[in-house]
Length: 140
Image (cartoon, rainbow, N blue to C red; front, top):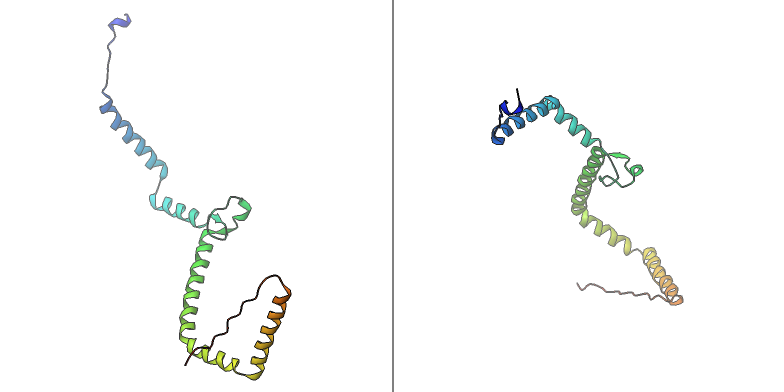
């Protein structure tokens, strides 16, 4: 038998490609295993990734001291605390102004404020930098 007498089989690429792609997809799915477990593992790895204080991965690994979850939690707590304090301060604003004004009209406080201004002016005169003061009294 010679090579000339052998049969030549040719397959169309359009026929073979989908079969190969399906086999590759099946192998990938088989290797990944349970999608839920894979997702849980990926999320766990992402949340416990070591990052810097700002929640970003630093160039130097020694700066990556914190879990991302830890940084995000602290940031959320700080934001909520800041908002709560701002709400409380807004509600207490009138009381604070009243107490500050009461403190400022005390003779001892007025003397200490005046002394601080005079000391600042004396220091300013001795310096090449200028001291600017603007004292304005609101009209009633």
